[in-house]
Image 1 (spheres, one colour):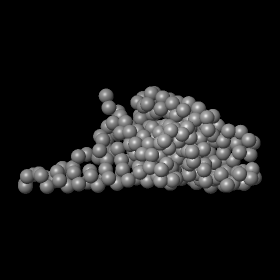
Image 2: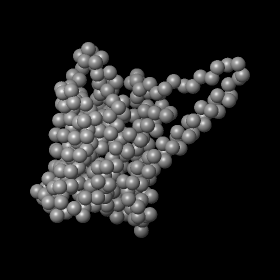
Image 3: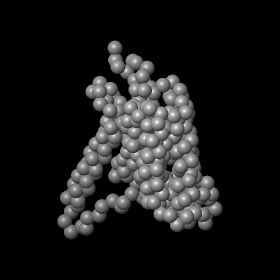
Image 4: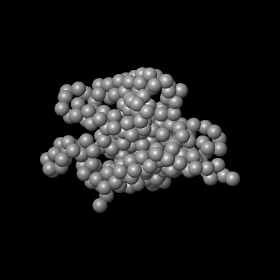
Length: 290
């Protein structure tokens, strides 16, 4: 009997696949805003929520989601209203969040399970976790795809979006909240420290071969889903960590596409007749396809 006939492997595959779809769908906005590492910061804050949940014997996923949302909104307010730089706000998230989480989990006496939250443990996904992951994953996809033109406008040029009459503050908060939900959705499957890999790497890979925002989002979601599914398929029989295997597979795809696209550009240059100037394709223009 195949190992994927067991329910825990089916949950692992479904939970990781949802992360593979949602993380790049949201990550394309973060990359556009040059906030690729915000997922790491919010992941550290979510660890404090995990500690509170474990200490109070509540669902770690739900408590971490609430705490991560509060943290993400707080950072967005600090970024918008104060003179504190984004780097300082991220540093506060990194050190305060992970310290609080490790401290609280230590108080609960469950520190031996810390690695499962940091690096993922999809084989431990239970029925209640699966329901939460599916509901939150669908919500992230609805927001990321349904609000695409408005979110893209804010991420591309915030000042222009204000002049155009868009509710910039509300849209920024939506991005922050969606990021927090995406991170906590991935907590069981990929892990809080590795979810940023699926937010950033598939988007970077797609940008090597696409020229529009919609096509970049679609391809990055396809690459994220492929990395997630193949990561679980490889990690199951080989008994390796699922989160690390998925992240390494995403990075391997990036290297293959980067080398292939560089080789294609070199071949095009050599095929140009002598006397004609070589001209590379323009850099990626993340515009909304009509």
